[in-house]
Length: 333
Image (cartoon, rainbow, N blue to C red; front, side, top):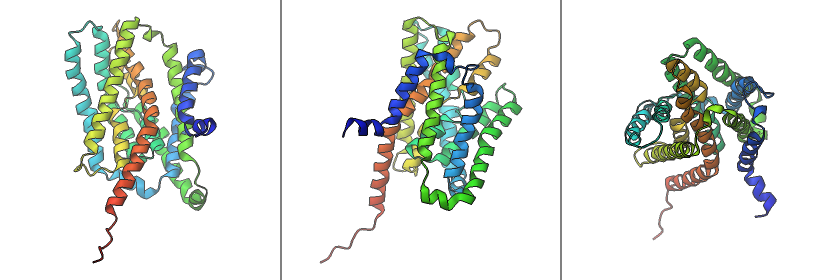
């Protein structure tokens, strides 16, 4: 395989490297309030574009089917709301005897209690080719459920989710009805479009990370907390993969992809306001916020890097299942 062909095939990984490098060189461009205005272009326009894209590309039957996939929804929500925070709490009991700053550990505990993000899990599921409709439902439902039970204003959460998720999705479905034949004939690159939006999100996320003074820790603490966060993410992704691929799980490979991303991702958009309300007046608020500020870009980076590997597994698994379901030819005597 030639170099150009290799680069063309791995353009997304190359894009990740380039946008992170650009964010490191000049983070002020993509920070909140900066020239790109990510608080508008990403929070509203980009997220709306993602779900309009999903509404345009998904068949109505797929959305309806995903809505009725109760077992998948229960798996994701129980893992997110019960298993994740409980496992983190138990893990922190071990870490409490180490010299790691106690406020960083409290920050790790709050990460476990955060709702899932609305956009990143959906984009990554779509990039792999997984059950996008199920990812949409669980991301939105998880954000709504945990967000509305917190101190963050209910109307603010509901209106933002409605305007950036529900409305674009419905508009996409309506437009699809009128151009359905054209879509099936031309097959627009919906996956590539979502991947480009994800690169924008990665860029602005890392701009915020590099420009944030709260992450100015001593090198030892920073390295340890980054290592712990990546270890948690890898462990939980592996666990969800293991549980959802058991022989009696009844989940398809596409379902597994949605489960892996939706169960392990945490929201920065809802998380930071929740921390500011719950820990208002705490002098250590900046330290408590650090794990979430690191977890958010780490989950996007790790998920993006794993897209080719997970996609390869899913395709090969689907082919293997298809072969096993084919009727065997009768043996001639």
